[in-house]
Length: 484
Image 1 (cartoon, rainbow, N blue to C red):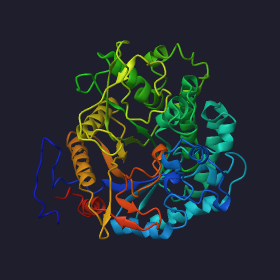
Image 2 (image 1 turned 90 degrees about the vertical axis):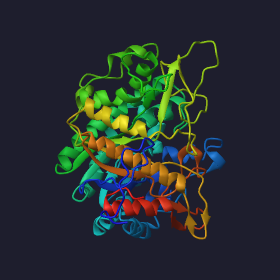
Image 3 (image 1 turned 90 degrees about the horizontal axis):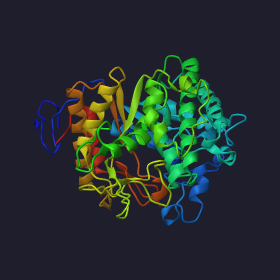
């Protein structure tokens, strides 16, 4: 449907608007991550990552799935690039696998690994697709984890060296860099709850990892500014949009449970990165866990670096209240429960179930949460542009007659694009929107049991089938207008 003939439905209370027009320079694309799609786990000198080790450990991943083959993207690069062009993507956010560049996380560069990403970048540019390169999406080289991983301060400095290698090789062509993807997950799910690699369950380790990830970000920004001074630099955070017990969006200033989780999930990154220093209430809340002696003089200055935009990942909201200590504590925080805690210092907060409908992940569908988040970030950081770097949903998909009729995902995307447009209309400096995910893929601890893609992947044959949501999104990109 052309822009001129698209009927305008605006202001629908359920966020099911159509005909809303995005600016011509609003970037529309899709995102993936290296371990989730590449496969070729031992090809061309790639070393093992913590996710190779974790997924090969019995009981850690649903059905014993691993990323050893995944979508075989490493060997199907050209065909996948053609698919992106067919969909009309204006941007593609991918991540670079550190163990492809440095198999042990230190030492000389593995040239075949760099060459793969060079081909990827050149292929995107040749097709008119803007490359957005994420430098860390959770696949830490296993050798570095053996030396302490993100609990070891040296890892942050090794990361800066790795970033230098990549920027020197690709900085002449990559115009947008993202230092870290969702460091909250790396720190708190990887070292606190044990749901993600490396699978540790230690609150002190989670907070040490938090700080060293923040430090790695700051060091990486400094390297990128030096090596690729004309590029844009960002970080991508997964924000917890928090509701209070009554289901209303909470205010950290007048709700203790909201304040505590906001400090751990959000301000533990935004304040050191965007303002400077750690929140005093975070330090107080976690004083029984650690004295934060791992924060050394000068660290907070390194972490606080100017950014060109902030990447925003959003999927669902979170609902909390203070636990009374009597009834069984509810733990519906939306993350896989394997026995550990992602919330050091806040064991007296409980996470309440929310109203549906839900995605296949059990996450509530709440487009108002995205609008609220964008408006809040814009108000708190008015000079910093934003970009939605991940948003999407897992549903049960089936190929029938070479078609995937995923009405639920299409509806989810339509409603969230409407939320983003409403934020734009209210003055939010939102620069783009990247759907998660381009392809069905390895969904971390859930293996291949959850499908987020706008393109279906048959993992047995590797056949790609564009879902109805993908075709709808292609129309949105072409006209920069939300279709019917």
